[in-house]
Length: 416
Ligand SMILES: [Mn+2]
Image (cartoon, rainbow, N blue to C red; front, side, top):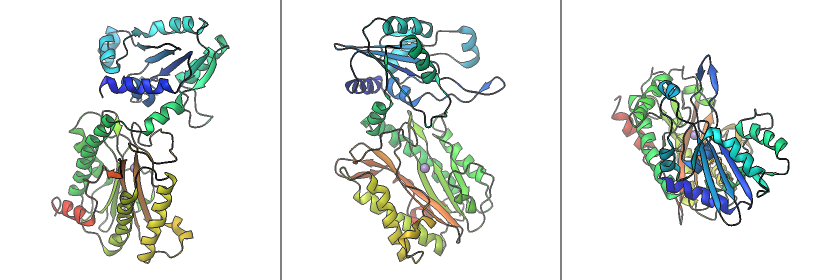
């Protein structure tokens, strides 16, 4: 992403904030895994969205006053010894080139600067990015610092900037959409590689190896999130990560995967017969999901209620399943449809956005139709990424084989 994108994100954020406020956002700390080894570090997505800086232990601070906004980012100081072990750190001029934040300082200056501002009498509020999922979640940098600040500067009114950032992240900017389109091309390659290699007797981890190899040709970052790749009855575990199963002759393979590009992700699911040819029951169920998906892409447009997306997916898919003779009472739809089908995607795979009431241009969310028929041993999802455009919508995942013919043709080029 160009630095202007991040600058614009910040400028749009300030518009919805109170004057005479400080804003503090942390990039996060690495978490220890075992011994002297950390989990791979994952920069706080809001921090990345606002600054473009991908590093642990950075802090962004802004002063929002009546007349101006002053921004400063605190980065890790150079450390020749540590950098020899763990790689070079972002330097001040690089930090500017990535973030367009002109004032770059080293981390050790943060507390002194903060104290001077907090005690200056010029600021009434202090905004933090509070994003806990539940009240028992462990405190991170943000919560720990806020508790300390509340003791020392009890006169500062604490506010949460997280809802403001969520609101911004709901609408994707053109450069985000471009990045998502590039990610879709990579995801397609990974899924097609799995389809082509597919054959009975293949292990789930071998499918995953095909996917990972294809993604690995496009950069070191790999999958945007842990891939779900399963065969046969394992498809009945919605978030399956064991990869130990083996595809038997009539099994369907399910994948729920995504690449990322420049921080932006996608989330695509396909279901296909491991032997390359859908049997009658697989065909019947797959076409229900496909018809429902096609219907959704034909009706989604700005102005539609977001709640109607899931509702319509369920109702339309019920009609399909009814016609197929699978069920005849809508009250039993939960037997075959186990989850909702529309979550936003962007800087996170389940994007941390403000769930909109009304669909608007620039939103990107999944159209995910899962059908799980335990009695028949058939379970799969058909999931595509829907970009809302001016007068309708666009299926960003359309190039990844999705009709029965496209999938069977793709698979013929491989194993057969
Ligand atoms: Mn998914």
